[in-house]
Image (cartoon, rainbow, N blue to C red; front, side, top):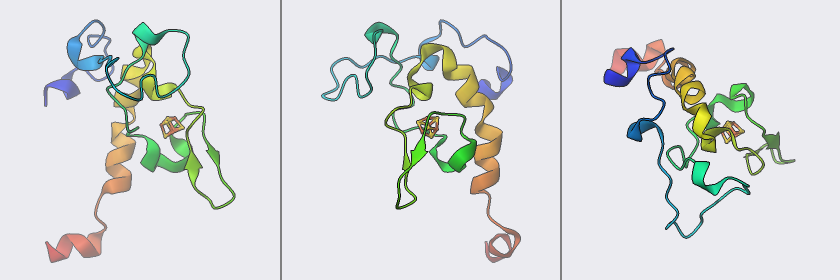
Length: 105
Ligand code: SF4
């Protein structure tokens, strides 16, 4: 994939694929910000949610054990595209089938 070639580089900066600002969204901005023009909507549903406490974001766990990301701006900061993409190796690991399921496919 083309994006993998850019992993670890900063070539994503200034590219349209790395930033999407959707001010027409009924929820914009879904997190409080002083910089609405820099608010990235690309990772609206954070791909790092599945990493539990290893996402690197500003989360807390509720009493019921649900991860609450309401105070986190990590996926919405324009400069964090490279960080989010750098975590995909970990996402692949947590979503891999285990050996038993592999044999059934
Ligand atoms: S705390 Fe932030 S980085 Fe972590 S999963 Fe939630 S929104 Fe994503």
